[in-house]
Amino acid sequence: MERIKIEVEKINISVLKKSNLPLFYIHGSGCDSTLWIGQLEEIGGYAIDLPNHGDSDGAEIDSVEDYAKFVVQVVKKTSGKGIIAGHSLGGAIAQMIYLKHRDLVRALILIGTGARLKVFPKILEELSKNTDEAVNFLLDLAFAKKELLKDFKKIFKDRVQILLRDLNICNRFDIIEDFKVGKLRFEIPTLAIVGEKDLLTPVKYSRFFAEFGAEIEIIDNSGHMVMLENPKRVNEVIKRFLKKLNF
Image (tube, rainbow, N blue to C red; front, side):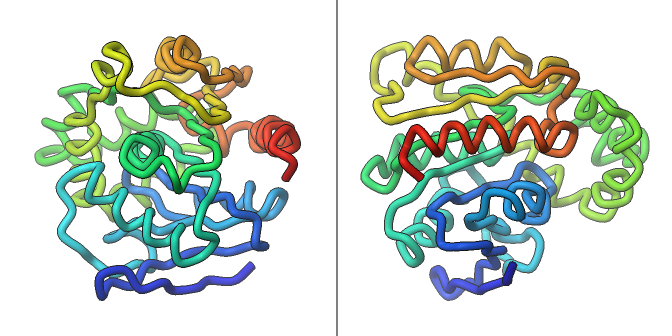
């Protein structure tokens, strides 16, 4: 595994790379490329640090579209076209790339995400006032396997402002009408993966995708952070999907 830097609009975007498989992983709010180590090691591909996250440089970001333009350039400068996998906020970015740049997307893998990502008001309110309580509340909702909470508590407490900005961006993301009016339908292979016990982006969000052409896979005994809670099963599902695509 190697870390590479790709320049986009004079900003260095950091990417963890394991093989030339054109599979691009996009992390969620307050996270970074290391979220995907379990997938990189077994499957391969590229895991991107979004601007202001991980080892990437800072940039002015105010929307899902702002993030998407950086990912688009990473794809163009590496494989030219790719399979876009995104978790939570990353899943919103993946959808936006498909909506705006369909020629770049071979397939989609949407993990613990939705066409609308409203955030509990308590989380947004408390993150700016009572960090510990807000982070604990968020993580309690995010993980079904509570033994995994400890490491993330420190990570999120160290990234409160990044996390708060990301969650506000999630809260504004809503493309449900694009689906309902026929502007958006999955016309490429699309896999929606969701944890059975996901309280942040519940199973019904992925069932909505299934109404518009996505294949859905529900992972037992897992919450929102499904790729960490049940990596073996998630990897099996992704590899089966890639096999159908002849990868």
